Image (tube, rainbow, N blue to C red; front, top):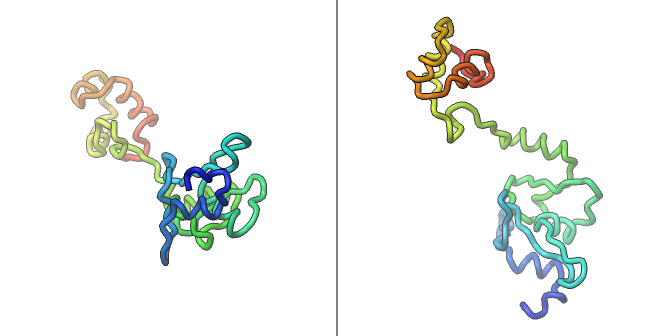
Length: 162
């Protein structure tokens, strides 16, 4: 099949790297850093481009995607290309879908991998806000003077209350 790449239809291209079943149709070819399948379409010499596998699936099975529209997943699986799991939406719809499904997690505080302080330590720092020697507090907690300043003035760790 490798030699006949320019004669391969979109359908053949999709199913070459897809595991089908009762649930999601899982794309097993190349995926980008977000987990979305990527597939080359067009001739290698002329107009070759890479597109998302779920977008190619939508166009192959459902129809043309209007300009500016996104193809969203009902199943919330970026590797899924099953047409029944895909639907059209605007960028706003995509953002609202992300929020509704809880994928807009904002990492703050100790959930950030580089965080030095724990929430209880920040509470203690905030309890000592009357204490005016940021340098001494910084040394005690093993952080910079500027972090203590930022905590004191609500620029960092705003979500933690004393």
